[in-house]
Length: 287
Image (cartoon, rainbow, N blue to C red):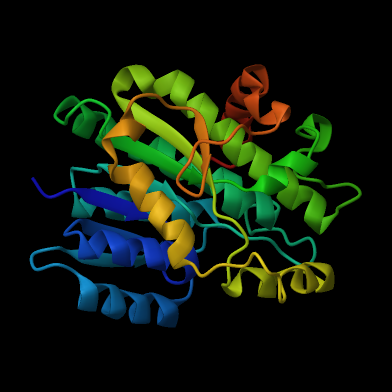
């Protein structure tokens, strides 16, 4: 049976490189992106490399807006009743504090709340697929970052940084949130046959840095360790398809190898609390 992968942020960078790799393998690919032109171009390019018979769809929406995330989840459900792998890749950071039309800070919205909401909405399909698939083959891969190491813990009293906003600070917090989300997903849904994995992509040559402030732009320029988006994409594909990665969830990877995250990324009580507080926050805006 042909496998289906959903890749968020697939109109450029790591997501597009990953989507292309899956399409070459003959997987059906459903990608998401924000910009209409980039989505159209990416869909054409991914289709051009797809193995015969593989289907490619690109869905457009702004992951800062939970209404768009909810709509896209519904569109995915309309396209397929099978999801073998969900790649939560969409994200980024901003040069200053922006707030969505729903009142959510943009970095937290795109990186964490959107990841949580989309995964939650797609859980029925993931569970149904797992019930009829080889054990350990249905996986959710969440892209975090080594930036989580510089965040001592979640800012529970002001998780959206309404006060004393700092662009780099909230980005590092949200990458910790990605890691904690991945662990919470493992604890909650491993029994449903869903394997939750987390990865760090490295410093990648993409448009990621252009949305940040001057310091972030400087950080991303001419770094000796910078790699093309195809490099982390190979780790994503390996996590999605290698049999050995279906043996246990909640793990963190870099460069096709398991890596130990910082202690705050292993805090399962924080992971449990983040799940509950995210549910409560989304409920305040109707999701």
